[in-house]
Amino acid sequence: MDAFTLRIMTILILLFAMSFKFNSITAFAWYPPIQSPVYSPSSAPSPSPSPSPSPPSPTPYPHPQTPSLPPLTPPPISPPSPPPTSPTKPSPPPLATPSPSLLVSRPPLSSDSPNLPPNLSPEPEYSAPSPAPSLPLNNRSLSDAQVPGSPVRALFVIGDSTVDSGTNNFLGTFARADHAPYGRDFDTHKPTGRFSNGRVPVDYLGVVIEGPLKIGANYASAAAGIIFSSGSKLGQHISFTQQIQQITDTFQWFIIRMGKEEAASYISNSIIYISIGSNDYIHYYLRNVSAVQTKYVSLEFNQLLVYLIRQEIKNLYNANVRRMVVMGLGPIGCAPFYLWQYGSENEACIKMLNNMILEFNSLMRFTIEELLEELTDANIIFCDAFQGSMDILKNSHRYGIGIILSYFEI
Image (cartoon, rainbow, N blue to C red; front, side):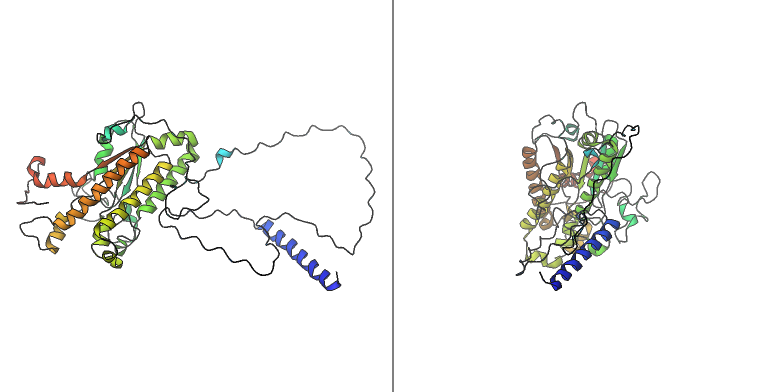
């Protein structure tokens, strides 16, 4: 080894030692970003190997190594003389090792989600709760979602303007209900952010649920859709995927505060209410955003929406959710705007639009039945909002509605 090579190696060793000193002072913990179950970026291709080998890059936390200089010969070191004898003090007890239960990780995503990162396990990390009693697939109701001896602990709401209770009041968007005439029939006779003259369906649901239901959280955001960009032209909103992430973060907070087992029991005895999907038609498909109608016929578009909901339901299940209510879509073909836009005569509903909604609801109902066979300890209820709404429109006098429309046709 010549002198020039020796100098180069010495410089590299000194640079490595300086790099370790810098890293040891400014070290910080890094966690990989959480990938979305549906909208995660594709994995980057692995770089091609370089033709010539390069020295390995230092790790974030390298171990110090004392460089040895070949030309220098260390002098012999004589063994140290033993210290004088003195009374020894008892050694302190070793420090306790932190419990692994303090380390909280994000619940794993479903194994069949698109672009699932390989480092996420498809198996849930929580302990599975006791299975609910088996029920017929077509004979489930909201009361069946309450397991005997396990009252409902909390109600969590995910959705759009049909259940938004004021989320968009804090966002920069045109989809806001914090002004008149909204809320004129509410308890306070003032607008609250609900897209209603009074209450929204989940307000009544929280009243009729039996048990010590005292807390809950509403993550719904007006203009939100199953597809991320649905309703984005109206301004800011919390999309379906983002709401799932928010409720997952809430579950993590439960684990930190309660512990893993108690949080798992609490989550499994709570109800998740999902009401979303109409904006994917109103603000996306029917407006032909990104020429979507040339890429998907209505059946294919409905299949895409149902698939995305199915994946998020399985992600919630992996987070230990066992009780869910999934709302179908209402008859948007009977909305006054579309009656005007399509030139309806005699106030007849637009069949083409309602047929799309009937198609979506049928696919969603079939998917729920499939999930009930696959997730045997889950209680998932599908609520057909279309049939209920049409019954109110056709038989308004039965519900005390004074204005009776002259004619309705599905």
